[in-house]
Length: 247
Ligand code: 13P
Image 1 (cartoon, rainbow, N blue to C red):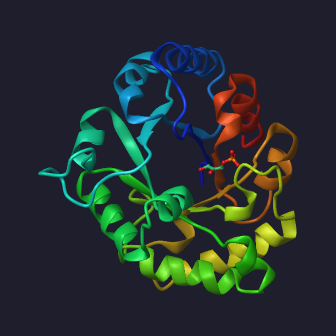
Image 2 (cartoon, rainbow, N blue to C red):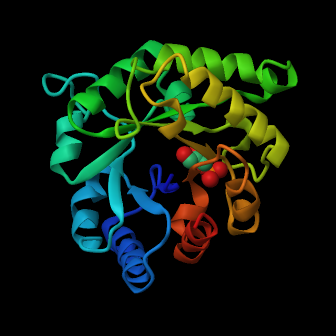
């Protein structure tokens, strides 16, 4: 399975620096096509300029969120068909920052993932436990519950990617150990058997403080099919080093 390395820029980047970063990455991808699929998820106002900056490089584009409806009276929201129209192939849904900041529930995440798939996008559905849930021994129960409640049923590998992001590892410089990552990813793979069309073909990304220094170790863990990267995706050298570690 081809690994996926996705940069989630979150709420970072203005046109000049975002386009410069994307052009830098596009030039590297053209010079040395990476073994993994490389995805950039910039803030929505940068989608159109980035689509231009990465054209012909093989790098693909994604949104960071979408509405459950395709269009309508929803001020400030973005419909999945609009992301598709802007050149996206993917959209992240259910990131822990949205679950927390915007009180998004599993049911809402499932509806957003359905809307994404209906628009022809691949949904990257994020799950992950908090520090309290991990220290309480509830990690696997939490991620399985999130999967069961957040995934539309019977999606295939072209429609769904799962991203496991422990909330306590995001932006903290702390990560689970490789055996801890392996245990959760194995549990996710097992849970997918009852939920998706081709469980073995669904990519399961790890996210949370992935850096060049730990990428190779994390990316060689069984059932880790790529990475979802925040901070390090804003630095061309770091993001590219992670993409190469995935190859
Ligand atoms: P960091 O890589 O900054 O920890 O962020 C991870 C993340 O939230 C990606 O979606």
